Length: 333
Image (tube, rainbow, N blue to C red; front, side, top):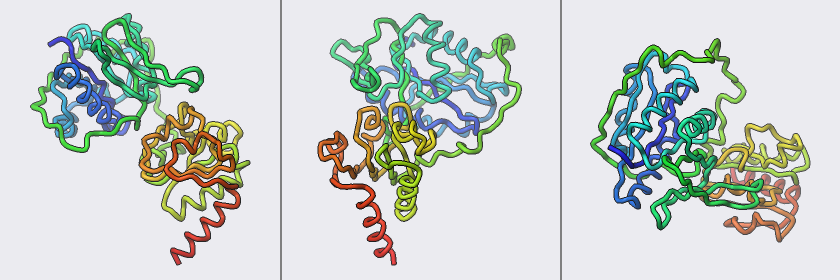
């Protein structure tokens, strides 16, 4: 089989399939309909016997063919091994499009594959489509997030990395009679220039609550410091949410980098997003547009954040937030 769309199914250190795979699978199914029902394929590296844990989710995700590399050594990700095996697979199946999640692993793996294949790569995409000529139109922020550029790749496969949370997994089951094809792995495939000596988990960032938060209270430079973010934390605790920050606030040291939202941070999909003292530069808003409902509080009525908000409050956050907190506390009492 040649042509079609190939997706990299990333397995995390905890042996879970990264959620970005299911987001890409749903988008790939949509794209395939514009390519005369082109087949949707995926590639997976896993430890032996783990495939049984994943199979049901895979067969309900609209995948026609799953190429499986299985070995005990795949417990740990290895750039050289993965890149070499994927390059050989791509040369064999000749996909038109190859999609990879823009995770830490994906950002490491994708450019190595594209370089070995001599093809282009559009990184950190926030939208994918098929244009009138049947080519992948990949959209990403450019010029420091000031513009959105839609990029076409002249070579095959057309490669793109896509940020997690940009697309949503399928709501309904996309049932396919998925064919699982085991690919041969040889001892020489594991001969590398770099070897993993020890894995040290960074416990502080083990779980980033922004990934699954339904309510996010985010602050910008206008929060004026850590004391301002304590106010956001108080509101988040009352609502059962978590706190996020704009890059500007992080750069000034008001908040840690692991809660940064936007082009160089997290893409989030909460049910409710409250933006406090955030101007609404595109570098930030690209990370929140998939939110179900956006409320903003800003003392500048002309701030761009009002353009994408469902509800806007013109006012000083240090006057509005304490009143809002008081109202919510009284309503709970």
